[in-house]
Image (cartoon, rainbow, N blue to C red):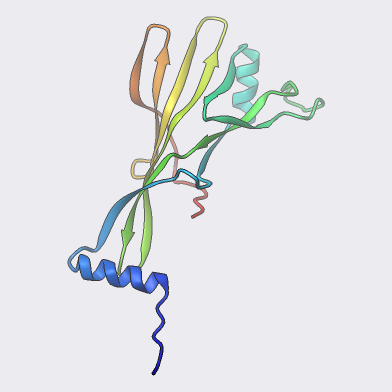
Length: 167
């Protein structure tokens, strides 16, 4: 008697083909709890220098953390040692289109719910929270919270494609 062996991928593809014979792709949202799924926001040297000159600080809140800080006290841009340079925003969910034939994975959006960046200057403060990376529109959206109110999911900035997406 011959043993028949299938890989997990073969079984998953066969099940998907059998259950959705007319679908070219399916959209699915993954809960990333327990996975290493992160978005990293790295500020340019010009942006950091401008923040320092204008006495504006950015600190992480919620699940966000400072990823790197300035360590060179002799840097040419006069950025103080300890100044945050990049922030880690843990991704809490990820939505993608999964194509069956040919196999493909196309990101739609990622969310970082519960993370914030708190921006404080001499004339006021605001927080950006609950980030969404919209890969279909190349936008980063966030809730904007000020002492006088808040707005949900405003377009914070646009990017031209995602540079690295590791799955």
